[in-house]
Length: 413
Image 1 (tube, rainbow, N blue to C red):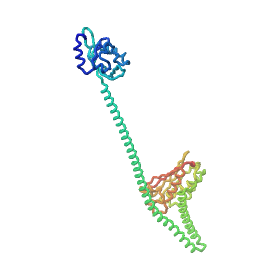
Image 2: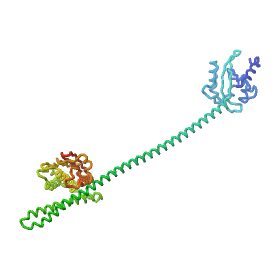
Image 3: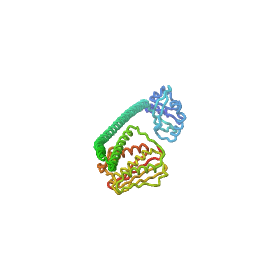
Image 4: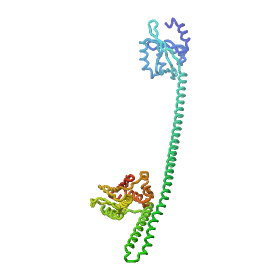
């Protein structure tokens, strides 16, 4: 067939720019054009009669035979290697990328395959350059993105620091305002305290001076009762002033940390009996102190003087701020770990607006300003109790009474 129509095939082969290779069913090359020969580096007609494998890299030989036989059976034109990169091998053993279009045909009872081969080296090079450029662009984008993320993180960190500083500034301003408010309140309390102390000292001192002057007038034996009366007045006033000075000394010791507690085991009944006995001397007309009589077996390991000071202060206040013909009730609750004292009265009570300041030093409730007192007793009691691991609280209603509750561990901390 090729001998008779050689002119036609030569014209056909040379008319196309693609390489043209024709093989028979045994994959032997029966025809090539100049483009194919130049593409694979062979001389004119040098490929005729050679097996197609000379143009295929060795690592593809085994698989190519199966693909070729399957293509011959299908007998349909198609592009070779869909989805795969194809390579050819030149005479000098260099490998290059290519594309192949397969076209089966029959002539004189024989089956042939004509392959149109295109060298895609330049296109692949360009594709690789595009891939590399895209990769470089992607890397650049990643770097810029990372730089942007780093900048954002740094900005967040700066914002976080600024926010923290702003919070600190706001907190500092808040504390400054609180400190200023406390300073103003303290100055007001100090002013009240100075006025109060002046009054508290002036009244007893006036009484002492008057009684001293009157003592000189009672020289007769039958006037001994009058002398005793004024001596008692002097003694009471001195004790009162001494208690005030002791309170001031206690404050100084608490502030400077010079206070030392003396722990010992003692019967609770002993302390309560002493407190009640001393406070009975202060009873108004019709007042009574009620206390439990079943506490003989209760013992504490604490600072006895502080417990006595606490109960004396609370019971004394209850008597002072309660009217005649009322009862002051002392209740005791005791378990293995702690002991609670409840002191309840039906006195003038504490105004609701003053309750938040009742433990503040020098503070006195509005309804107690005309009653003797310095406003430091409850502050001293609370500080001592907290130092010993205890606590104090109260509930009160004006003109109905007050209940103080003191809780203290049974053992020293």
